[in-house]
Image (cartoon, rainbow, N blue to C red):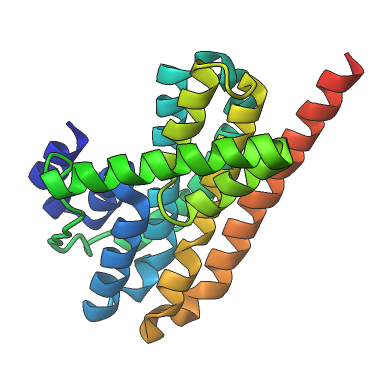
Amino acid sequence: MNYVLLRIYGSKGIYLTAIFGGLVNSTATVAELASTLSGADLVGLTVPVVLLTSVSMFLRNFIILAIFAPGAIRTAAIPLVAMSLVAAYWVYRDRHRATNIEKEVSIDVGSPVSLRKVASFALLFLILQIVATLGQRWLGNAGFQTVSVLGGLFSSASTTAAAASMAMHGHVALSQAGIAVILTSISSALINLPLVQRQAKLRSQLRELVLSSALQAIIGIAILFLQVRVVRLL
């Protein structure tokens, strides 16, 4: 459904493209938009556009977790909302930059119903489940969470789905699935930085983007740590 919305409305504005594209595939969207912004001399939109894809990604992962492992939302909800608010603040602060600059854009993040796309997602989902299961068995929760962080560098959606599926089948605790979604979301947000850094024209915006992304990660992990401590005390 979101892919259809992206195809219909995405070309009507860079911000809409960032939102819809982030829900489909945030990493692919940032890679495409970074090239588009650089080529169209829209460097000033880099920070709000990239952060909008992160907000969409946080929302998507929240929804996936809520559908397949609703009990894990108790752990993931507050950190995900807090990180979204940090990113949204930067977007709101820089919202004026889009005024009269809403050029038509077109990005290709791949159709979610294409056989190749479905097969790739399924293969990655299967690999993540196998590796995460082995990590949990050999190294405990630390192994499972390490796989979640690494998975976010490739696809936080697949990693979230894998963690939620494992929790749903009782292979990991609901709280561990919630933690995994937070960590994979942070990892997915941070992988945007090198994608922007690759575009020479956009590097002037990198410092502000690093600041926002680092603050998101710090706040998300800090809230998660406090939640874990409170649960242990109770």
